[in-house]
Length: 320
Image 1 (cartoon, rainbow, N blue to C red):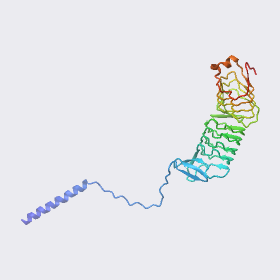
Image 2: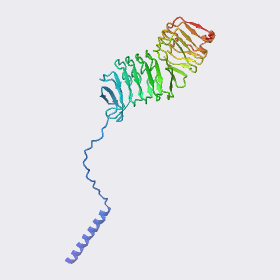
Image 3: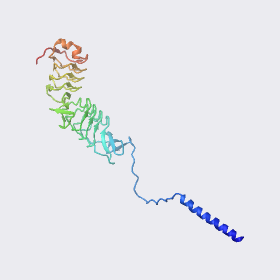
Image 4: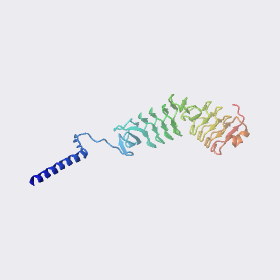
């Protein structure tokens, strides 16, 4: 009897061992990860976009962990404003914010870093001591009124990369003598220091610091641009070439010495306020007839093109 019981117990034990072995084969392997090696490296720095900081006296705003832009003068006191390529953390300084230096009367010279691609609206407006600016070779955009009223600026040179110059960017620069553009530029062109668009169909800006009494718009120009001669106090005679069709708004506004304006037979528009406050205006020479001049559909005269002008006479059928 005892032998039978012993045999039964041995058989049950063997069955239990076999079951355990089968169950272990079905179980997934458990991998024990290796113990990490201790390191002394610091975690990478993170930056918060739009947070501001002050460096070397200038104010900046972070755009990302690789770029930032300049927003103001801060505590900077040097009269020569040098904007570096990068900040101390290696972030590219890519543009100058709206009105960043507007109204500053201490800066005499600006040297832009090579990574500046944009000067935004009114960035240097009213910087009355500014005489010289060195542009970035990557500069693509200059906003409207960017250098408006920089009354000491005598010349400016734009790089080949420039693709957009905002309206009135150089208006009221009363000592401006020359506007230069790199020959490789496709969007703009300079001829004798006067600024035109690339194919010279629009006269964009005449440097009003010039003391020349006469100017003839070159052949091929179709539009005398918005505020292009505004505030010129020296010019007395302007003659349009035969191709000029449009005198844009405020083109000769406050040209206080302008006495004679000779139009083209092709001219069909005198823009709003284009001769506003030209108090010395005496003669408008017009190659067409009085009937054409009086025909609004053909001439498209605005009611205010000559507001504040002197008591001028229109000479019709002008032959030159």
